[in-house]
Length: 360
Image 1 (cartoon, helix red, strand yellow):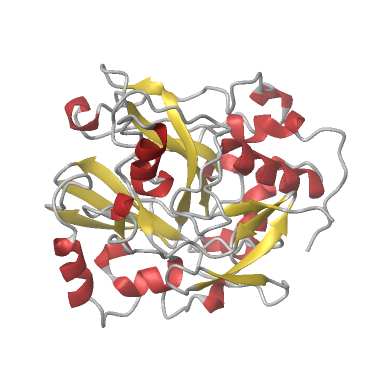
Image 2 (cartoon, helix red, strand yellow):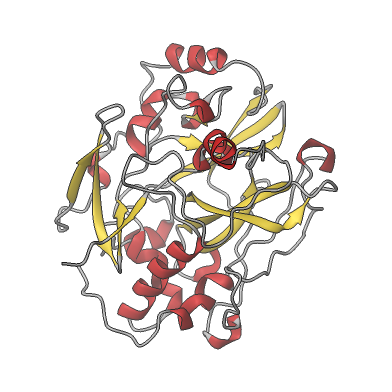
């Protein structure tokens, strides 16, 4: 594992991810969830503070395609018609679908969860006391990062998961066993707890206004005790650490975070180095189109991880939050598939939790 370099400031690298904000190409009507019009470009700062311009870092001016773009990222796409509204109804239907598919093999060509780990990395491990699942993790910069995506699904004890707000790719439980679960943003941030804590019905994460989360918000979300959902600043810090420790060449950052196997990127697959043990699995996403239509897409070629930070620059007429940020990685050799973007909040992305490293 690479040793972290001591830099006088890490904030100068904010431009690395700021420049990768994604343009959105939504196929759903604005009435469905209040999304932006097709082709809208997202280009705001990662935090409330002034961030360096993308032009300050060579090679980072190109934008990443939106997770809402229909087929824009290529890869394997499986369409599920008539899917239930992620914010309505009982979760029993999704549980039945997963139960009926329990004996199906995963969509990862026979690779197991452990196959995606780097045998050259010395991982740490912890147990989620809620369901006793174990996860590997590593230190990157000043944070511990989970090396495997969360696979917590107890909607009885975690109310924000009620109503079908977490999914397995292709509704196949075997995919959750390998890559973790896909969560809506409301589930990822634990919107029910946020409402309770505030003493007011904020409905944060449910397309309503008054969501007070920002780029620097610290929330536990769906993460286990002692861990939290990473915000934009956390993702930027990790990205900048990798950038600075590898010659300051932004076009190669993604390759150091992708698992060595499983990426269907043609000639770029061999460039997946997983040097830090982040071991990103190309688990695809659940793309929200309308309340009755969604796509599972981009497995083996792309993965998106939720940020705790909303996209406040794009709201509906009532001031509600329509999209939230994520860190995206794609099987490419340049920065066009790697960086922070924004996605519709009912869509499904993965969760990697973080915690601060306690200095002795």
